[in-house]
Image (cartoon, rainbow, N blue to C red):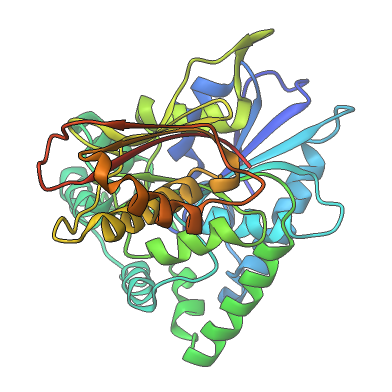
Length: 396
């Protein structure tokens, strides 16, 4: 198994970055450059891909084999006393990381899962399996690069130079001048032999592995991902290690972490600090829009934008319930809940609605964890909205 390495080989802080099913360790070049001052960054080509060797039996292209290989790699890069291992796993690389982090006595300190979880959409898996098994040859690089771009549009917007790199990393020129993809076509075999029954068994095993994880977990999801549903991502915030969730808008499966804003998300989670004795000013934002973000996270503090009801035909009670449900959902995505609220500001359009609003609030608020609160009568931007709530909270 071949791997690229960045930073000081004597650095005990090791970050292992593992790619998706048809990608390579080169995917992490930008991320590695950004983090190699803090980490020894190790980016393997999983067996059957890139510069690594192939397996004689293609049925072994499965997570257990990859976990075994990675345990050997981790042992190799852990020679420095006091070594700690952080893990960044995209798609398949995240499944390997989940399996490793579930083992007793495992060395993983922090785990970042990039658009992957225990429950995966069957149609998306079928699409990926069909793509993997297409043995294709291209007469020139530009034709091959266009194909790679077309099948990778779910990665989101990238510059021409970035698309060129994403293609060049996974294309190889043969002696006859033809261009082919870098991996062993045998990777498709486990997909072909999968059945609904084996898929359900795999899902049960993956949830058991996820529930056994004890290290901090950040789950990054492309907001348009067809592989990892929002419902599964939310469930991952409620069980097992209760992952913190960040969703990246206008991206499907999977975020590439080539861009500075995505790299900042990883850096904030993995390092937490910008330098010795200095807290980072990096901010993680969720549900980023043109005008505002619904959530901003700085260190261990979570700031929610003012939440209003979508159903403005409801009375004050109905609107308040909807707003508080939004607060619950956003806090869950940010790794918190209503017991961790530090301050709440409530704006209502008419103080005559104050008692009815409070009735709903009293049913919702966590007794013993009631936060400081202020309620103000105010004119809201949408006259049909009766209440708007702003929350600041700490992490769980």
